[in-house]
Image (cartoon, rainbow, N blue to C red; front, side, top):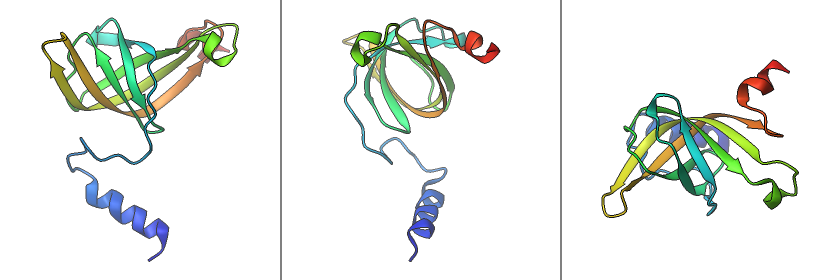
Length: 130
């Protein structure tokens, strides 16, 4: 079987399935500060791990499974040799939420559907205007 057809078959098989534990790419342990934007209003959090398709977040609040979420991950400039922090504006979908009442926070698994890299202290809106 052709590799492309196999991948297409696997994707179709899992479409609509519970994707909580289906991982399509390698995850890297990366702890970076973040904030959730928009109506969710969860002020701050931290990434636990990231891959090319998703991210696991620790948040001070709860997000609903299957909800859309906009968040901004901050990559400190000094860690990548830049003069300013780099902001990764992400649009994602929540696929799992693990509540941890003892710590007062939630672990949230998200698929990243779209992202934009914003450099030099700009906001996403300022980057679009240029």
